[in-house]
Length: 125
Length: 230
Image (spheres, each protein chain N blue to C red):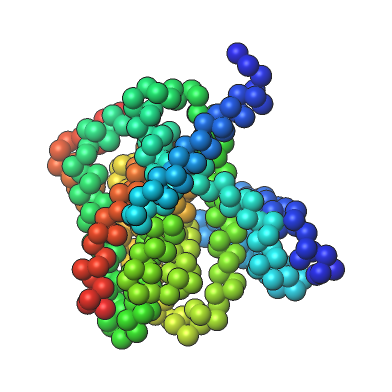
């Protein structure tokens, strides 16, 4: 077994390679799909085919997923520059954001729960 | 002072991590869902930058190295998804119908509300992609004739809302199945919601990651049908 820092570095390399492959696909295909979603799909396919073993990415992936909320902070702080644009439509924007978020949470959650329970599956693990 | 801070490469990234730590401390102390570390950190940083007279652009010079990890982190979502693949396969019909229903609910409710408020076509088109991940939403907004900056704002607000409110809302509506919770968070609040779903559990996280991709793609296909109605 290699040293832990090196293991992280190697796993991070694998994830960067898939991010890069995602960028390449985005440049090649004329679809409005971001590089990250291509990368996610590619890594998933390679895991399923056994080309990449889950232990070869797991530690670095867990690290990235755990710090994920931090990664959104810069773009949320970006709202400070959008204040002038937002101010003119503030009330409708807030009502639409709140109402539609709750509607989607309710509709998606209940559709899934209803179908899972009808099938009698779901809570079986 | 503000000149030095504006030129610093480490100030932006440093305060991003520092304010997240402070957010975690506050959350741990009071244990209220509204005291979301992501939201607290963003508010704290905006206040600090305003006080110090530092522009967002200057802050982002350093902070962009934090955001840089977002693409690798999204790629890493393949891992929980792979680990829950069997669960997904067994419940494929439920999963896909729920995400489809969620996308239609998003587009339908936004269209309806835009009409009620009699909003400009441009503004309504900017709001339509608000539930999906920024990278897909930006391209879609452009295609529909929206304004990019408004779409970015709407997407960020929607993400934070889902992240902050989902847990209480699930309790209120008795949405208990981990699969249903994950799907709802990912479909309503894209990656920012998913970061919350990952904290709830493995299954929630995996289902939420899946929803980012599926809901994003479905919305790209469905939104053009709605844009004529706003």
